[in-house]
Length: 153
Image 1 (tube, rainbow, N blue to C red):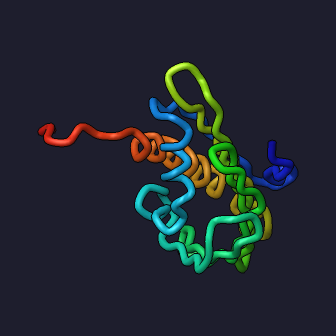
Image 2 (cartoon, rainbow, N blue to C red):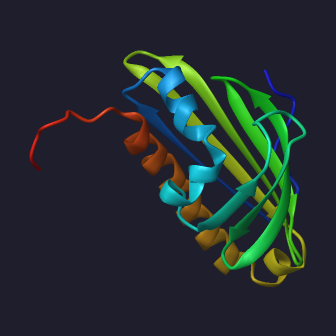
């Protein structure tokens, strides 16, 4: 189990949880494809990573118009993925946890935002972060469940 956590003292924290009707391997496959995050993570506008997904790997991402320089703090395949990053006015931490449940995989995501921006605009930043992590959970669930080919919607 990971010892990496979000910053529980940060002025803004949010979390979400969903049960996905798919095995952990399928969920992990989507979650660990970091360059694809902008396709399903609301608020993530771009990701640039030049090496494999491993603890200590650095990457850049654009969230809410702000560039964040990040580092993977924990990578436990099919179990947890956590990162911490810094932007000009904020520090972010995000931790994803996967566990087996009847019928699939429980996905939990927790996020914290510290720094000047969330201290000044706490309510707005909390609202936006809550919306984002809820969307991340729901969209990860949708992306992880295989669709039937040849079916019309």
